Length: 463
Ligand code: FCB
Image (cartoon, rainbow, N blue to C red):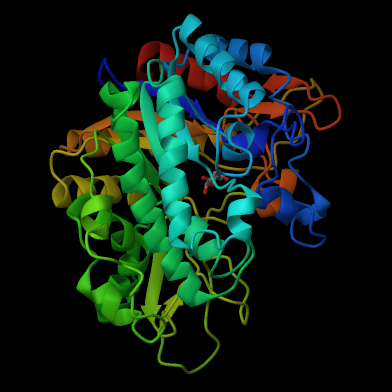
């Protein structure tokens, strides 16, 4: 029987734009995701986050849902345009009051609030002024972080500055499949840097407030990159530099890796990195957040034949993999989830052990892991998602294996508490352990929610 440490933090995760709705209420300003989702053709089925899960109006019952699951923590994100509509100036009081109710409601129920400051919903005004490729956005982000620390710092357990800056930079400004839908490789690398800088400045800003005693973190979707054969070592190294060390380098070691700068020299000279920026990005962290869904498989590409692009982007379209013309992203063997992502939990164990080896002494937390499946509603009106239970069981076993191997993993958050707006895929992809009926907004526990409640209650994986 697999048993987790007594102190292990069990949770579920969501993000503001994916669940809240109320996009134009109580003074909330527009974000780049409002603009993106309201642009015809960018989101499947024309879906938007206008209503999402109506979480803004169903806060109390959603908090009761969390209490029913028995989780010790809840990872949510604060909508920047809700609390500081244009990304500058003072707080929008009605918006800020929503997160008071959320945080206090969690604490009343004995659930630790884990707050992400930026889960992709940049105020549109900041994008209009240049977005993440512009240095000023990092400075604005730090100011926003300070306001959040002043307001909620006495009550939040863990602060996560950014969620998956890989996606913000490379999908937002590189391949353009995420907001703000730009396809400019040099801008994407500038965004990488200003996200790193913004992270460091935000940690500093938070520490100057009542949040100073809270845990500080950032969530990265690190890619566990494997090569098809030994001959693909250079391809592995390049993908690893772009995906992982572009963030781990500055954030944890205070420097960009040399090979990253060299590999991207035809795209940018990195002159947007000013003296002192790398040191500013490198702030002591209490825990590193890791999001994991599947591993990445690469092969050296010599330019002949059709190139595989198994990472999801269309052949011929702009790639999120900047300067990786000689790297082929190879489709991996199944089984697959509804996203087309292969299920392979061994990558999670290997990734956690690598982090433990490369960054000893830095505790880790799985801030997202989960899967979309078809989730048909049965005759009994329920969702019997044995496939999701199997996915979660495999990945929790993989975490336990990493812990047994020495990795200091402090907690695990299922993505997601409930079915929600899955970005460019709209509502078609269901990741929740709780089903949300799109017509009635009714929440129904799937089998996986019952299963997870038992895991949380016992701290053990059932046989
Ligand atoms: C991650 C995002 C999260 C969710 C999952 C499926 O990349 O952080 O919001 O969409 O993927």
